[in-house]
Image (cartoon, rainbow over all chains, first blue to last red; front, side, top):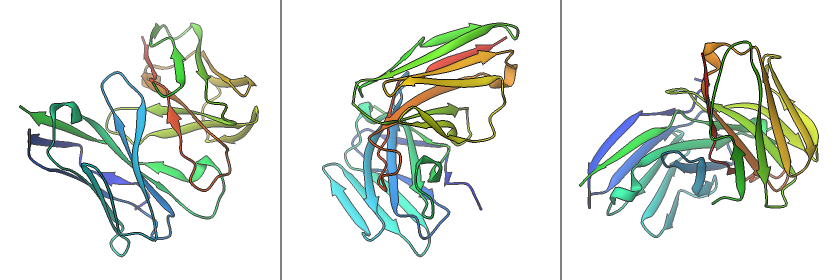
Length: 114
Length: 115
């Protein structure tokens, strides 16, 4: 399909790990991004992974990339209440310069239960 | 704070009103963007400006009119909107339009309600 797909909702208990999944559309996409949107705020770039990598770790965040299945995931270890937000997956498709090759998913709303 | 500000944060307007959304970036970036965020839908790119020139226009109705007087400011002029135009309008900027990595920095958005 043409859309970047994400589940709309995810709930986890504080202290557990969260895994947010994304299926993107183009196996040739060069950069895959995770953005976080807190209530009343814009999107904040959390992390990204280049397509020649299959894993990237940054403190509590682990990004896994499966290019064969066009699957991207974001794991948040030791999830805290401050992690409650909407998480957007985005892919940078090849073939054109500029912003019109950056495509976002619908966002996954993560709720952390104390 | 991402270095991108938007005003107003909330706007309620009737279908016959004319209003404008404002975005300002303090990052020295050359590219600016308008996105529309609706519930349960992917983020939609509306307009892109690079060095004050429009480079993308994704089939947006003419009732939305962008303006970029300089590389730090971007406006979205609104006229005779429809209720389905109610959404969160996000502004973003990036260093350059043509960079492969194209990391974008977003403002907090303007929540628009059309009655």
